[in-house]
Length: 257
View 1 (cartoon, rainbow, N blue to C red):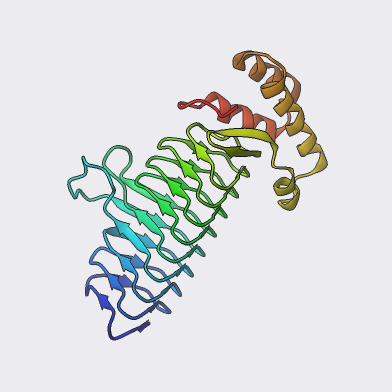
View 2 (view 1 turned 120 degrees about the vertical axis):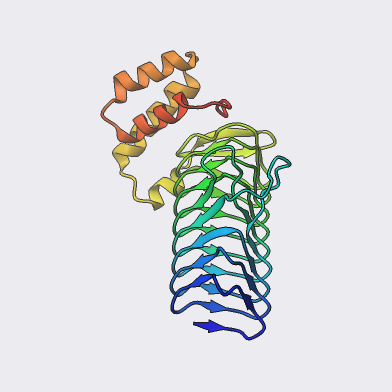
């Protein structure tokens, strides 16, 4: 361990080998930090927070602080961060409330840029990019490989599907399906995220099936139930089309169209 003498680390905090903690950082009693994670200067980590291995946390970030929820009364709720994440300057990630499973969770390999905010009870997957000043309200889920542009604001309880991309300065009040491009205030869909899908190695057949499913759901004029039934009938052997269909069926806030 390499802990700067000006850092304040609670004696009951669990700090693994290879961890670096920079000047003036504060690590609380119930915090666990995994191997080879680097916490820079002036970082606050508190609450019941578990941080995995090889993460990089940059200055002035606040990790595991109490949720911005007026009903929260300092109950034991947690934040779990996986491995290989980059959390840039002044990011804020809050622990959960008691309203769901008491866990805010971030997966592996994510890149949270400066001033990004992950609110209570959010669930982030893997390899997500959140650009500067993205704000996630409470209870949001974000799928793997999603990209959120700068200054995007996402309403609480919204779901962002895997491989979706949202343009900068967008306001997102409803679910964004997987595989699509969205932008605007309020956000609208602009077709599939074709560049992102090709970069992630989706086959020509998979992309063609998604194009057909997109046309059926959003361009055919069918009501949603009829469109989803047609997708299942015509593309039932496409895992990507089925994933898109299941995401649409399970929406509670409604789907961005």
